Length: 154
Image (cartoon, rainbow, N blue to C red; front, side):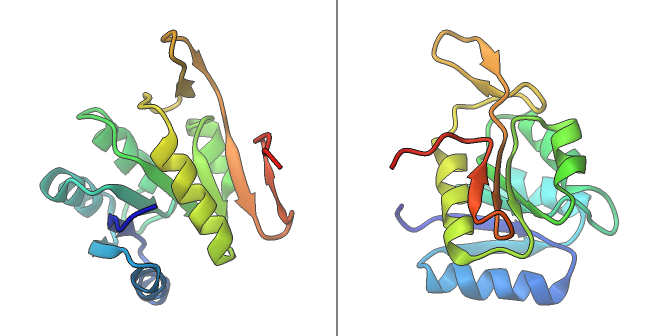
């Protein structure tokens, strides 16, 4: 995975700063760090990031709702990083989710999966080559120590 331009959507300033530092150490550029649903939509439209890392709960707003709005204009790879997996899964069954707290390897795996995913509509699962849709939820979780919902190759 080469250097990426990333928008971080996180309303907790400490966590946002930690993302910026971690992603910078990984060789990526955080082109914006925003804390609200509205700012996430504006950042996606004006900056055209390679990837978005999105918290589900924002104050004000929702990262999931922001992504639904953003995806209406076209595909933007994204990873939800949240403590509330069930809420994300309810509205976006095919989402790539990294569970807080997380390890760097889990974030990297989530980023790779999001970048490799075919464009899809929110809540529709991932698009297959035949144009069919199927849900392919993926949760990277420190507590489970594995990837749930995704068959891994060796």
